[in-house]
Length: 328
Image (cartoon, helix red, strand yellow):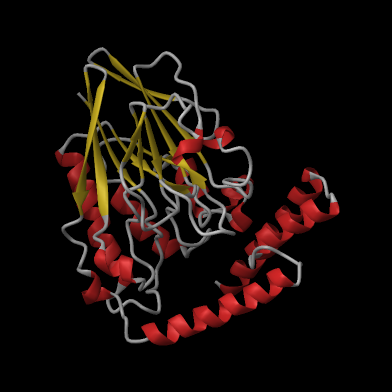
């Protein structure tokens, strides 16, 4: 039997978010240690990470050292993809200048790049692993380019994407892909992250689409309060795939670690922000209040070519990198 353990959106950081009541790094260490212990207990053949390993591209070396030492206890490889928080300006090409890139070079986390195929073979069964990083066009361009893969010389294909895959239509103006758009994939299982709340386990034409939700809870949204972070244990035997969710026992209850005392104030601020966004939309300027989205809108409106747009994105990444360096 081939086994994998899947988790996503660990958002490793050395400080606590404003709405956390606990010491976030200590809680995260306990959860990661639980994940490693479980992986070793089940003797999984690999741990799979769906992206956003880190909360920022270049956390301090002391933080990185503390957390990566936990992963070194694994008795199996750790494969991952790049999330939007892992690199500068959402640009996977900046990987080598990040701490995730360092972890990859050290062999602690093995990054699966688009187009690459990793094979795990055991007892006559061969599994293909592929991945798609977050990038500025994800969930905006033809979704089959990122979510649909071919299965080559394998019994089972598993594809990881750090994208906004949903089981139904989402909020207008938020880039996302719905499962019905990618049922043509040859992946037997598509694993996603990015959306911390996850979505309902979905099966279409014998293909499984999963997002178990984020490994951590960074917001005090009511749905985050209610859910318990979890992982997915995947088992493949005789070319047949099954899975089960495993809640993290070390994850405290939401009301123990998430502060809702400022909930009403936060809701009011969000309403004011939405009003401002609506005014911008009505003025016919931009559809999204995000620097990357604004650039995308400008490029489309002004007929700016993709190479020029990508150059601008790279300049933003360099500026972000310099800013983070000056603050560290």
